[in-house]
Image (cartoon, rainbow, N blue to C red):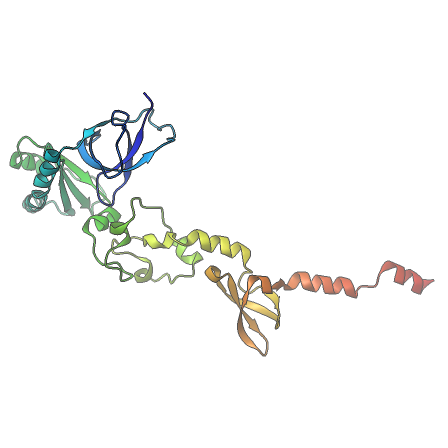
Length: 294
């Protein structure tokens, strides 16, 4: 049977996973389906159909089990309403056990209530023993498999949401980011952003995700523009580059007796090359020297 690969998302702003829906040929984006995952059976939403899929890295795609029924959707909503209560109970038990450095961020039931994932973050470098907490939560929710899932600071910010440091009502991670890209301090330096921690640090305490948005454009533009302190020739004369504006593809040039002016890349000529041409044109040719000596 020819595989029909679809992308399935389990959270509103979450990563897309791929499954084989060959058994449901008329499946369309927006349909709700039941699939088997490493975390048990889950209810997800189809986001796309992939006509020409690449071979999966693990060898085969897991199949879509079936379409979700109205009963499945009602069951999911029923367990969703119990997640806040489960999180509060887990936080209370964490305090009673005096598990310092452990913060319970969220609780997630599977659509049928068979599994309860308790999502937490830890400030401790070493691994914390949470067997007692898992056991107590298992007694509180008999018949439910308890999973303790640790997440990093960026994932915590994504789950909690809130106002972004830039003023947006919803942080980028909670609004549209499905994956977190590697970010380094070099990205801030290349874009000329202040390295003051409050300027480049997000609400999660890590470097802001938005530092990567325009980084490639800045790097490409810097290869085309003359560097700072480079001498160039402009329509107004020779000067020195004092600033670069990569996104505008322009530079600010300090000109003697004129001041600072902004020029586009096409208006500039390298001073070194022009000077070399001048020197070459000023040198007498070999024939002229022969004529003088003869």
